[in-house]
Each structure stands twice: as structure tokens, then as C-alpha cells.
Length: 262
Ligand SMILES: Cc1cc2nc3c(=O)[nH]c(=O)nc-3n(C[C@H](O)[C@H](O)[C@H](O)COP(=O)(O)O)c2cc1C
Image (tube, rainbow, N blue to C red; front, side, top):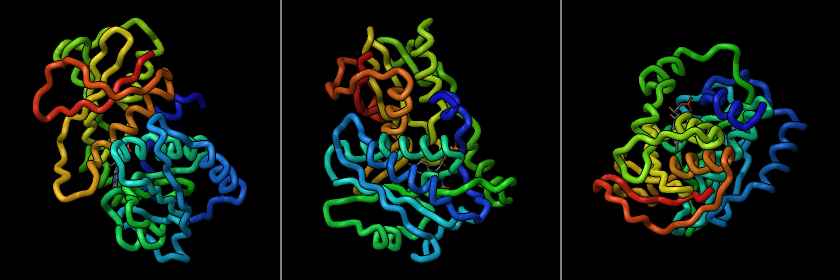
């Protein structure tokens, strides 16, 4: 499967077949993790946690035997860097037929943080189960996907713009079309899809449309979503990341995040 196909076929998996991840796949995951980097240059550490041994579970997940937790130093851009690196892992796992679900809320956070040995100055924004999808989704999973409208995505004309935040982007460049489609399909917290992109020449400015409150939290979960979107975009189109706010008029609920230049 090529990258766009991986992105198109990936869905959150909340119902697993109860089988352990094979030694071979575990080895592949461990080797791949060593190669994961992000354009922010912020290290993200991954910890594999046996669910049974550590008594780990999530109320929305069934049949899982293994979790993976990600940790990152609490610094500027750490949420975006985390989103980028963790999504690399998610897509690689899917290339092996291993299902995942980003979990930032529906878990006993303290227990996961303890088992993942999260230190002072570090955060663990999300974890994911790792395992082989069951043949059928549980009733709970079906209900959850319906409630969250997990199969719906915002229309491209409301996400991607040219020169300002109101003119829909039109492009004949197939690579760019595919990169935008990859962004559109990305997973996000409560499926809010907070990413917006403004194209100016060969620069693609990423904005966050804040739709979830993060008051009191040490990090903004929607910046993790933006890291995922940037990961999808760059996985298809490449480019280099920089952070210099462009001179574009934006509403108060829109925050500039980064620019990818092709
Ligand atoms: C940062 C982040 C946090 C998430 N947290 C949870 C969670 O706590 N529990 C859960 O069941 N799903 C969680 N999700 C999964 C989303 O609900 C899911 O990606 C979205 O509904 C789209 O569905 P899909 O992944 O099947 O495309 C999270 C996703 C992201 C990106």
C-alpha cells in the first residue's frame, strides 16, 4: 500500500481479536520507532506496555493486549512534534495490519503515566492500543463512531484556501491535491479537524481553528491534531517546515502553527 492508500484505509480500531502482537511485528515496530523523527527536532519517546501485566485498559477498547504510550519534553511545539511522530507510528502499524486508536481522554491517565514512567518536565499526550482488528466492531464502537460522526470530514473548500482565509484553494498539482486529501482524512480529537491551510505561492501556512477548550491542560490537544495534519501533508508532498507568522488576516479563534514550503 502506498502512503495515500494507508491514510485512506486507516480508521481507529477499538475492537481487537484478542491475539497478541506477534514477536515479528513487535520487532518491526521497535525497529521502526528508532527511525521516527519530526521536523521540530523534538524527541518523542515510545513505550510499549503489556495491557495484562500492567492492568491497563480503556473503556472504549476491547480485546487489546498491548498499548503504546508516547512521551515528549514539555517545550514549545511539543504537541505538534508529538502529533507528527505518533502518527508516523500509527501509519506504520497500519502497514503491518495493526490497528490503533489515538487515546487522549478515555483512559485512566494517571495509571498509564505511572506505567510509562513519565518524568517531571515530560508529558504523555496520548496512548494507543496495538493489535489486530476483530472481524466485527463491538456495538459500543459502532455507537461511538456514529455519535462522533467518525466517518465524516469537513469539505475541502472549508479547509484549504489561497492567499487569505476565505478564497477556496484550486490546484492542478496532483501531489498537492493528494497531500490535501491526506490532511482532510487525518484523525483528530473528537473528529473536530481543526486544521486550515492557506497557500501563498509554494508556501502552505497551517492554522489551528480552536474548537476544543484546553483550559487547565498543560498542552492543547488540537495542536497534536495539527502535528498529525502536518505529518500527512509532508508524508505525501515533502517540503520543509518553518515557523514565521505570515501577514494574513485571521479571526481570533485561528492560530498560526507552521508553514510547509514545497
Ligand atoms: C489527539 C487525539 C485524541 C483522541 N482521543 C480519543 C479518545 O480519548 N478516545 C477515543 O475513543 N478516540 C480518541 N481519538 C480518536 C478520534 O475520535 C478519531 O480519530 C476520529 O473520530 C476519526 O475517526 P477515525 O480515526 O476512525 O478516522 C483521538 C484522536 C486524536 C487525534
